[in-house]
Amino acid sequence: MKHMKKFAEELRTMEIKTTFSIKKKVATINQTQRNEIKKLFENALKNDFKDINLVVGITSEGVGVEFFNEELGAIPIVSGGKFKNLNYDVIDESELFEKEQMKKQIEKEKRDKDKKFAYAENERIKEERKKKVEEGK
Image 1 (tube, rainbow, N blue to C red):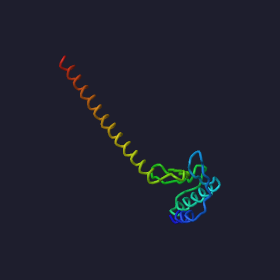
Image 2 (spheres, helix red, strand yellow):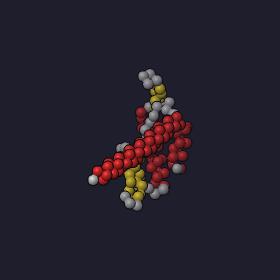
Image 3 (cartoon, helix red, strand yellow):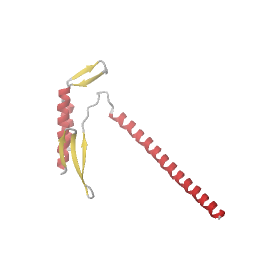
Image 4 (cartoon, rainbow, N blue to C red):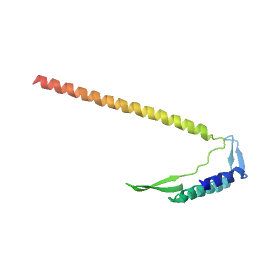
């Protein structure tokens, strides 16, 4: 991560040109400078992946990396750098995302439990019907 560390150090002292959006009520970074920062970010990320001998390149969608899998071969993953508003809070958003993921997991577990119960109930009903048919013979 030496390249990303260098990028972070550069960004910390970089003079950033912003404009204030009255409509959005937030300051935004000048488009040209956002493009420059994104390019620096992508190059740092690309070089860090290269340092650990991964196949990597910059695409129109972001930084593309191929990870090797013994069964499937190369698994490509593209990560696009997306600028957020300057009032975006990464910690708050990641905590919110984590809570949403936990809620989804709980809902999935409940659905799975309900499916198992429904299957077991269906099997029980089949057995009862089968017994009644056999008793009626």
